[in-house]
Amino acid sequence: MHVVVVGCGRVGSELAGHLESLGHTVAVIDKEARAFRRLPSDFKGKKVVGFGFDRDHLAEAGIEHADAFASVTNGDNSNILCARIARETFGVERVVARIYDPRRALIYERLGVPTVATVAWTTDQVLRRLVPSTSQHDWVDPSGKVCLVERAISTSAIGRKLSEFEQPGQFWLTAISRFGEALIPDSDVIGQEGDLLYFMCAVDALADLQDRLVGSGGTH
Image (cartoon, rainbow, N blue to C red; front, side):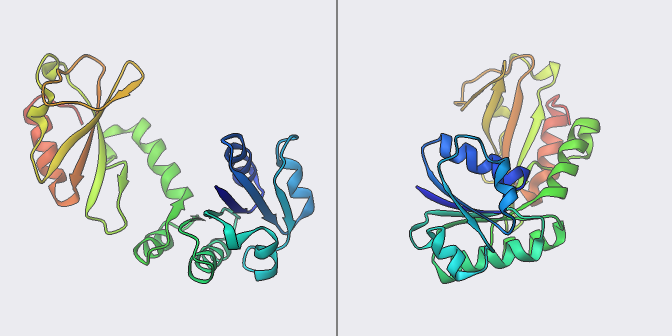
């Protein structure tokens, strides 16, 4: 597919290089020509000096036949504006905007503009590793109703069917990380030492999941 990336900083340049290595065509827009020096030396994509909200610059980048669009500059307002133009004016289906302010990110997610809240994500990841019990969930959908949670299995749960942790319609075990590899569990899978359990959960059922995990010997 063809992807347009706005912003050629550390994130944009790495994103563009990775997309191209996967076999996609990529065009990068940045207001500073010197920013393109961050791109891989063998980058073959289009480099456009300009702004991601300028229609001429977007056209030069191939926005009219783009399958995906990412705006990852350092400015929240610019990223949202670029993302909305890509989606609403040019009809690009896959659009994402990088946002630093988590409050804005939540608002735009609910308006249908997919965002990556850099500060909120980084803070959450650090907290999860420093104080695991402070993390309620690892991902939540834009409506705030469904989330993904990661929980480590406890000693008392080892050797038991992991389906015991489930409550249909409320929370469901969707994946297990075991010895560094992920697997999709069936109803008979048995817990092993070191397992990380991933549940899809209704946000209003988080407390019930926590009770189930604690009651079944799960850790939190």
